[in-house]
Image (cartoon, rainbow, N blue to C red; front, top):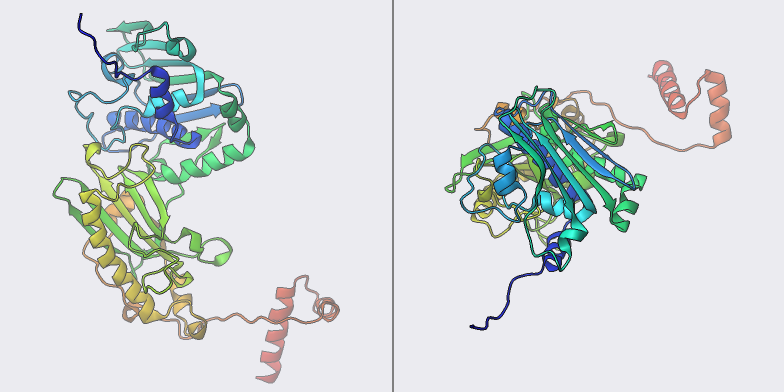
Length: 443
């Protein structure tokens, strides 16, 4: 008998490599993505009203329940539980996020030792239970999983259809993380940003019974000023929309520098957020000598790139869908156009000297603040003018009598005496009343 050198991976090594580079919040997003892909298959126009995804967890159990169509028996049998996408499996069609064939398995193996997947479609149902410890045991040479049960050619009502995944016997560190209120808060913020576009399309997502709200980029869009936009189809067949412009003010009536930069999406999933590095059109922030380095002057800049394809393998993302493949030709071609568009917006900043102290009283900032803005969702993207390649203050009607801030400090005891005299309760009211008094009596 001919001797051979064994080179097949052990299950333990395979699973450890599978889960090592994904955070728990990213694993949960993978499971939400699976549900969203189901929604896209049954709602081709991405109108998800009536569909929901409910995520619940504590230190003992994790579950995700949806009514997004279920997993057909043939997909479960041939593809859904395999480690990787077989070459003969065609894309399910539509702008899905499933591509590498490892998302669900990686997410579930990340969490715990006992996994139950139950799914119901209109004409089938099944359940699979995975005892991870038993499956990993050296005595078990089998890589496949068995159905607990399955039924084909049966009828189920619309209310029954969906998928339920439950993970118990959580790993110790996972249980600690899932029981931490700070993790729940972080996950909610992560979900609202990463899948915000789908939330705006009507799908209801809850985390521990808390409803999610899309946290999408907003840009000023009015008759006087609108974002710069270019749409094209890449030679690969990927549709690319590039949009850049000025954001409205946010919390405390300010532009937050941490939210400035480029946002990159693949099939509706936010992959890169608020990037201000050399990955996009900026030089590294530390490179202060470059005129393309980021300064707080650009705190209101927002740029979006939406890559869309019915074949997700063509999109420029990495295997964990947490970053852009910067060597992808699709991305490199887009980056050239991003740079062109960024220079147009930067030219507007330079022309307007926006938000600089020396120019704060000319009315431009206040005029822009009064303009309407739009949340950049799929629907809003379609409505934005594709031919707009200019931004100029010449198009803006500046308020001829803008309001300005007046700020000064005075002894507290004196201010309190004036409050009592004027019968007001706040320092702001003192400032307004005394200004009005002087204006009326002396001017």
